[in-house]
Length: 146
Image (cartoon, rainbow, N blue to C red; front, side, top):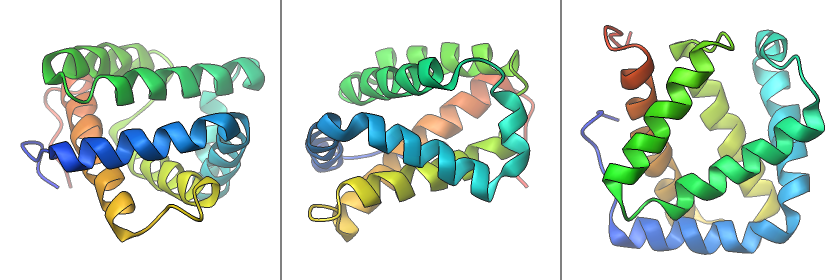
């Protein structure tokens, strides 16, 4: 998806509704996310040197902030840009974003089995594509996708 891609009010509604439904199981979702990430991108494990419980909590809280900012693109882009620049210090590279997105969608799909459908998945894909493109652009301004 192009960095200029965007998402609709319907996408925002589906992402927020599904996030709210997932929230009571956010701990399990974070567990599944990291398990899946380490399964599909084993080299990413070296990026996480600190307490994983704290890291999982921070992941869910950051996801909540991003989801809460979807209707304010200026705010969303500011948060995503800062987050990306911060993650460069941890060793995150542009090629890490694809497996993170895959693990995110996979874990959300598991937690939202009764609600997760093609429309919800596509909305999350659009949102993640926009956010990850913005993050990569902020952290690696000279990066050109392969």
